[in-house]
Amino acid sequence: MSDDTTDETTGEQTDGKALKSGEGAPVPDKATDSAATRTDDDPRAVSASQHTGGGRVAELSDEDREPVKIGERRGMFGATRGQDTSGYGGLVTPTLLPGASERPYGSYFDEVADLLGTALDGDLYERAVEKVVVDRGEMTLFVHREHLLAVARVLRDDPALRFEMCMGVSGTHYPGEEGRELHAVYPLLSITHGSRRIRLEVTCPEADPHVPSVVEVWPGNDWHEREVWDMFGIVFDGHPALTRILMPDDWPGHPQRKDYPLGGIAVEYKGGVVPPPDERRAYS
Image (cartoon, rainbow, N blue to C red):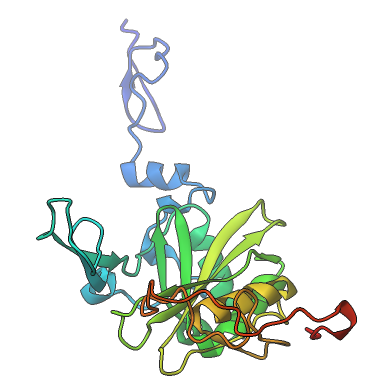
């Protein structure tokens, strides 16, 4: 009599011997297996269509993804005066900023975007966040300036986000980016959620260099905003005492802007005096 028997459940014939591990076992469907092994700890494993949180934005166009050209550099060092002795005087290199990034962003960035979108009421996320750029391992949320305070409060106060610390604000000046020449950049840090870091970036034109002050949200930005005003001329509306912090009060211009003349400025003190401590200007 043959030892062959038939499995009543599957109808498959076996030879009565125990199958070795992995031998004769059904091959799992690849799609099912992939879904089973995917975990929430790896946001990069989730396709863009599966991000249904409030942070989901409209599909990006090719123009959105294109790098933003803000100018070009001539020669080796971009010098505009004197002779270029590097031998690269004819070199022309475009100056590019990265375009908008597509989902998935990677790391914890997708989670932050979804949580922020859920925390902002209604369609405020779509109206407030111009674009998201992930470049060199950093996530930058470009925020329209009129919505900066609303976004800042949510990022600080929402328990799932809790970016308690703003590490300051930096200014940049891109004369070739018409209508948005001045940028204010805010690096944020969440201690609650394991030192997560993101950046906020706000733009404004030279003709209207106004951005809301975030001192009421992150008081430590007080002197940082004064420095950006002093060096770049960005006016932080609502700041408690927006005065120069490095240059004399009557100094003309803002020294770190690209259109500020270099050289040929005589060293002078313009009659400045240092008053006694009890007669000095109050900053509050």
